[in-house]
Amino acid sequence: MVKKDSHATLTVEEEPCRPRDYREQRRTENRNAPARSYHAYAHHGVMPWATARLAVCFLWLCLIAICAVSGSAQAAMPVRSAILINMDTGKVLYAKNPDMAIPPASLTKVMTMYLAMDQIRAGKLKPGEKIRITPQVAAVGGSSMHLRAGERVALSQLLTGMAVVSGNDAATAVARRVGGNDRQFVRNMNQKAKALGMNRTTFKNPTGLPAAGQKTTARDMARMTRAYLRSHPSALRYHGVQLLTYRDRKTRNTNGLLGTVAGVNGLKTGWTVASGYNLIVTGQRGKTRMLAVVMGGTSRVGRDNAARRLIEAGFRHPASPQ
Image (cartoon, rainbow, N blue to C red; front, side):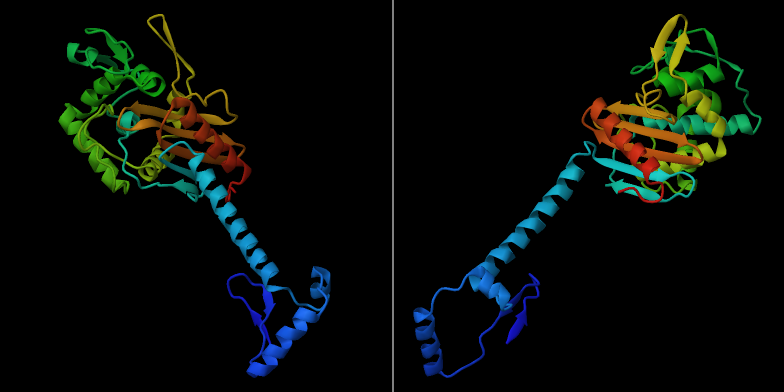
């Protein structure tokens, strides 16, 4: 009788039930019969049990190897969270822990710029408006545009400073001009986040500097970025600047993919000890636009490489990268 092994999908022979003396006779005959080679068994469509067991073991080893390769591919992405989206269709092409809560760090400044751009579009602000820098703004720590107390700086230049060098001083100056004070501006940030469906995001300040309870996810950052550029495509003129010159100080854009990966045109980096290395990156080749968010990287190089791999994969397979 022939039986199909449901696990290994191998066909083996199962001896039918016979009387005890018959089985004893068969064992005697088998001991006296000459040994049959593997080819002889194969010729008759029968495989010895030992060979069948080896085949089953081989298939299990193959399965384990496949799983190990898949796990290695995930481990090779040196970030805690990532997402890749086709910006035109909104289709998620890749995701790794996209809803993991991670501090946004300076990715927060994209929302700060979003609200400022909303005010410009509404006619309440002009890009050329000069904003006075207070001593409190000039004293804000962390990454800086190196603003000086008492000077007046055009809004457009402050937006560029936020996008290129991640200036916390510039972000604070813009937030206070738009919202009147930090508290009201943060309230506006969270209202905007809620309206966009960023249900796992809470902002605590306009800069992304460490603050208890400030959190977001890669999916929420992608949702925000897609809405931001849909509403304000001209914002890329700030994010695409590779070198900022301010008061004879030249500073390169913190986004290392600009100018090194074909088609990349923005958007924003971020880092704190708690968040690790974060990056939102956008790109366009022909009519295809891609958006990648990577968060919780262990190094700047690892973060940039992860984002580069995602963007390249997206352009190769805009419907579904492999």
